[in-house]
Image (cartoon, rainbow, N blue to C red; front, side):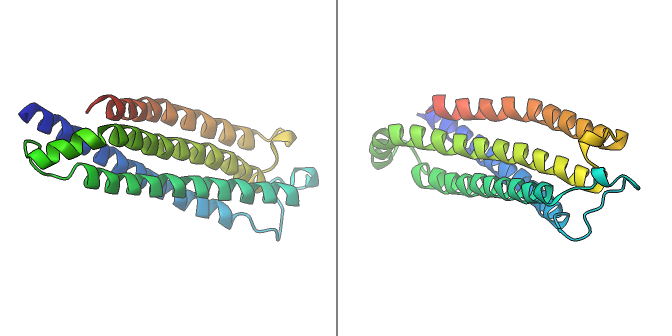
Amino acid sequence: MGGSKRSIGKIKDILMKALDDLVSVNSIFTVAVFLGLSFASPTGLHSLEVNRPECDPDVKMVKRLIMYEVVSFSSFLLSSLVAKSLKIFLSIFYPDTDPSDSDNKAKASSDNKLFHSGRGFMFGISILASIVGVLFLTISMKYVVEIKIGKLSCGIHETWASVIALCVLVAIALFFYLPFMLIALIYCMIEP
């Protein structure tokens, strides 16, 4: 019985920490979204590339920036709200009580399937929404670079260097982020 209580407590602690980290990361990305939106002003659409009007952003590019920023913000909001809901879900179904109590045993056995599927689904949705938010934020930051420095199609070295650095660093970050979040997701679905 003690091992079961410890296992449930350990899973709950791991999930709570993962959810707190997920919400913190989403908050940082949300700030980046608002910074990107501040560059979406349709007035004065001139890049830093002087005497090359073909490198200036057009209105369609600014519209795409706004669209990707809104989708990114919505994804981070979805992820954070689901993560907060999962924390409440964990507190309801696994409060810090003694599992040897007969009432808790009956509740745990009847709610076990609901708990496993519910927490796995909610955690998966939160991770997926966060990843979608990162991808759309990356696309929108590419548009910010093009609006400020000049279009990629103009072959401007600084634009290409910025976009390549952005894509490589985001890919590296996701390379580390995804496996550990997936391990946490699998762990929360397998363990009791």
